[in-house]
Length: 88
Length: 115
Length: 149
Image (cartoon, rainbow over all chains, first blue to last red; front, side):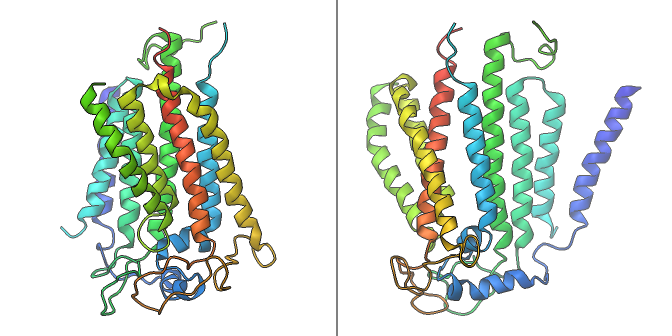
């Protein structure tokens, strides 16, 4: 009884994932995005960089990169703390 | 047939989810979580595509003015990949320490609290 | 590992290090940047561990962990430099100093190296952090499982 319920829930989840992704907006369709248009047009004038993605990661959204550096630092501290030699 | 990148990334998420359910070895569970993260990152990158666009880089771009794809989902996926790496490293360190203390990697047998 | 693997890895390691430094340094002109180049150099550390055994690189962890702290501190100090206007302000971008030249002409152009302000310095700080962090994790994970039991 429990196995049939489990299999039905699994089938509903996989069906929702695949069906929902077919039903989204078409791939490459036109979407209004004013923020991305501002980034593409003004990244060379303000940041003086040719690579717009790096200008976004380090200049326009640098605070997210600070959070990412903190997560990487916390992971390395966690691994070093768990794999040390304990005497005795 | 037009939404093929979205469907493939959701197939990857479904495969990772089925791996998490059907296996018990700790290393295989870590692989399943990593496959789910890969599917989600692929979905996030393929959201920003504009039909007929080129990469958002001005160095040696083709001289006629074409539209560029949106650069913001690519910047956010970079952060998500690094966070996935941090999660996988911590999970594998846990698996190594558990194997040293209990002698087994089966998730069904590690359950009891022992003194 | 055998002689063939050790000799080939001695040839591959300088080439891979140069490629990783190129990807880090030209992050504001071509695809790449701090995180990607740091992952390339960390794969060099993994190649050394596989080819020569992990016991030989045990003393590197005492050098790599303070280097990671240096990279993180350099990144935070560069973020605090523009605190007069905003946090993370690009103070070197148009000023004509160290990395302050403007783009050669707007639109598609061959890039010049000393543009883009604090972006190359931040790329180096984050690249150093990723190299040291991932290298230390790889060496520690392969040292731990072998010692006893």
